[in-house]
Amino acid sequence: MRIFSAVSGYRFLTFIARLLPKRFGNSVFRFFGKLAGRLNKDRRSMVGKHLRRTKSSDLDGKEMQKSIDEVFASYATYWFQSFRLPGMSAEKILEGFDYEGKANLDEALSSEVGPIIVLPHLGGWEWAAFWITKIREIPLNAVVEPLEPPEVFEWFRDFRSSLGMNVVPLGASAGSEVIAALQAKEMVVLLCDRHVGGAGVEVEFFGEKTLLPAGPATLALRTGAPLCPIAVYIEGDGVHGLVNPPLQVERQGRLRDDVQRITQELAYEFENFIRKAPEQWHLLQPNWPSDYG
Image 1 (cartoon, helix red, strand yellow):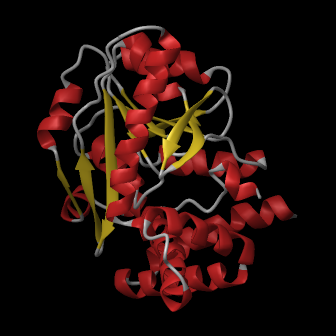
Image 2 (cartoon, one colour; image 1 turned 90 degrees about the vertical axis):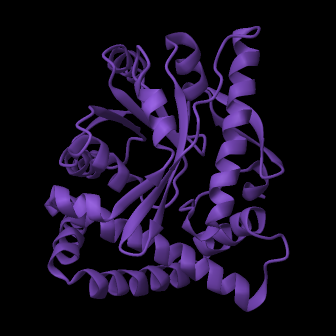
């Protein structure tokens, strides 16, 4: 019954998001996003911890509560926009999307192997992914964390497939599938601002030690693929992308040392992205050892 309710709930939200007028629908989603944040005290407290790292260590009182509300409202906007994407025309996708760093993206795409696009859970990345597959017509593979129960994961896989993505579940076979995609000059997207299993690398992230995934740096070093940091911010009724230059991924020493060096550089890139819009960082889970205290 719980499985049926979860999948049915996502289907219902998708139907509502496409049925309601855009601006009214976004306001409705934002209202219920804030309400959900008010009702979940544990996640609300965790978001507050993250905001003190990303926005201001002095954040408190009404300003803190307002910022936490905005995180949950922004997360609801992300889902509202995403649920509407499959029914949008190419003209509407273009109308709501712009980006900085065209030369950086072109540089990454000119490689002999496909680029690895790395980004945090910030803003609305699925709009950019749909733009890549629909407008640029570039094959895109997104590595995602498996969800429980499996029926929910399959719903998300079908949904993202409708946006033109090939969804690769994080697991034992993900590495070989991703390498094959890169060798075929396809794009690989990795959301990698938190460690969810597998090999991790200790880095300094917003002034504290934590783990980030070793996969992006390891893949880039072993395949020669460009490692290109991007962020996609929600702006008005659409999104705005920021594409930074590919990181330097040439071997300089031992593989372990190179992976650590590159992952630390990636952490600094993510810090800069997130500081531009801390309320759009949709990280609701613990991410540092001190979060579990």
